[in-house]
Length: 360
Length: 256
Picture 1 (cartoon, rainbow over the protein chains, first blue to last red):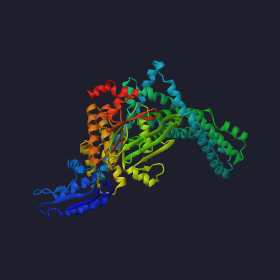
Picture 2: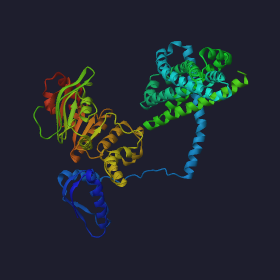
Picture 3: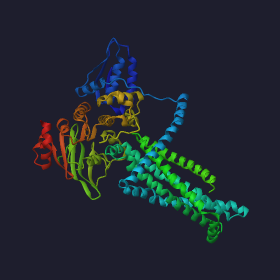
């Protein structure tokens, strides 16, 4: 048989069909020559297809041969002759047992997650203890830098969103309370809700999305590029150098942001109460003073640093768990935000029970 | 350099590249001839990688003209550009393998996108490329993070060769390899150039590569090509940097 024309990658789909047709001649003749003297150009694809044809036409009794090969291409054909069979793809098919196994592993992984978090908390506290003993090893510049990133730069978005949420709470409250003629109670609801719950919870969720993800991505890409290993080999503790400043910045930032957020929400709520509900600012403030006590404010503020610590710990654990691939970085950044928000809400529930039982 | 070479596969004319106020390339001219291995050297920070990236189109130039396969890449429309891109392969300095794909998927990626061929042929060609770059087919299902530095370079070369390009850009292919591995790599580039008829544009710092692999050498300095020619021309040059580079202590060690 005779091959002619361009045997190159561009024509590979057509060539593959020709070759599989020609393969049917197997065993029809005792000895087969493949004449390639008419081939105008040849590359790896073409050379391999000719070699594949040669192999499938060969059998125990007679080896098919390639004839008329030009000198330019002989080394290429020799090269592909060395190629063995392709290793099979190890594919994990979908099966019931596989899915059950996956569920089992995930559940078993929960304890691992908790241990990882406690482990990181311990390491951070130990690093903090070391810094207290040797205050000169404290990284002030780094802490201030992170404080700028997670606090100062977050102020506009946090204030804007909490302002809008305040407006919405107030509008909804007035709309529904009006039917009972209880417009003024919207101030009670707004004050308690914003100071105790919404202010800090909303800000914590925003911080988990904004700064927790950033921490995970930063630490994760440092892990991928072996920067963390480099630090360790130079005798620095990555926890002390990288994580403690980040944690401290977050723990300082969240109460500040929660305070600003609560004020913005009260301001927004007051504005809507005045413009939409006709509660003038003086009446609003008077009512607010009666409705809330310092306790509500303290409850909100006490929760803030704890939530910050939870977000920071989760973000750092996830960051250090990143493996070598971009996909892994993405997965852990997602996990950081999802787990961060989850733990923030769980903590909020725990605090609600705690404050209720001590009567605050 | 100024002569018009009909057979030039890359033709760079009067190219200027500027970052802010720093002029990295300043009216640079360069020809790469079909079928040759051009070694591209110069001091660190002289702009070797910048020129490579400018030719490929990753760095914008202020002025000048670049033709690859006779196509002016600025004037080309997107389908002409795509046609040119199919005919070249690029080995990046760090490999630039897709970290979430296996070796198999990395090498098959260009062919899978550009050619409609069966999975069987893709697998077979993948093995052929692995064998060509001197790797065992067993590495096919590993991820890039599980490979050594030398293996990453080889897999990246296999990916660059995936569509059987006519032109290959190698950005410091032997950096980070041990001398034996680097020697093998030079040998490999030579063999591939012979078997596949490649044109190779190789940025390198490695004197051994220049001696064993390259047909011609171009030297970059002050944003221009300060010399181009064979090893013998380089050694005969009076330029102080060339003197130091080709006749210095390390260079003598290579010759000896």
